[in-house]
Image 1 (tube, rainbow, N blue to C red):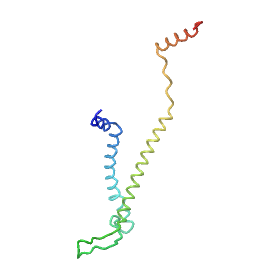
Image 2 (cartoon, rainbow, N blue to C red):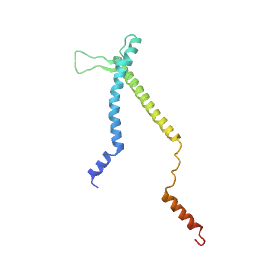
Image 3 (cartoon, helix red, strand yellow):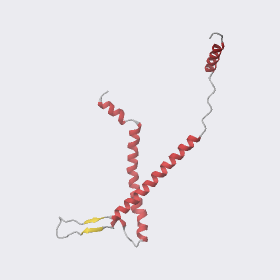
Image 4 (cartoon, rainbow, N blue to C red):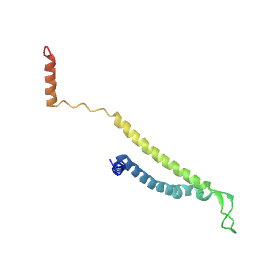
Length: 140
């Protein structure tokens, strides 16, 4: 088997395709969560804290020097980090709820009683009768 055909077989397997779809959906979901945090969750929190914009909160370690372009401002942007933590918590909660739902469906499926075994077909019944007859013959 050539390297190209092996790679093609690997790439089109269901798990790889499912993973690719999951990554694409996850990237799109990341944009939704970022918008939710930045434009829906943080403005009311900023309003409650006196109009603070969390995305711009920072500790300036070295201020910007307007006289030179070489020395740029150095700061720890803890407000942006707070936004990222909130985004992570939202994503983690959504993933938790999805996994919880899937596990609940699996438990329901596992709790269902197994269907009764199907009655033997006419051929199976005839073969069983022949087997039993052969077993009951003396000298067999």
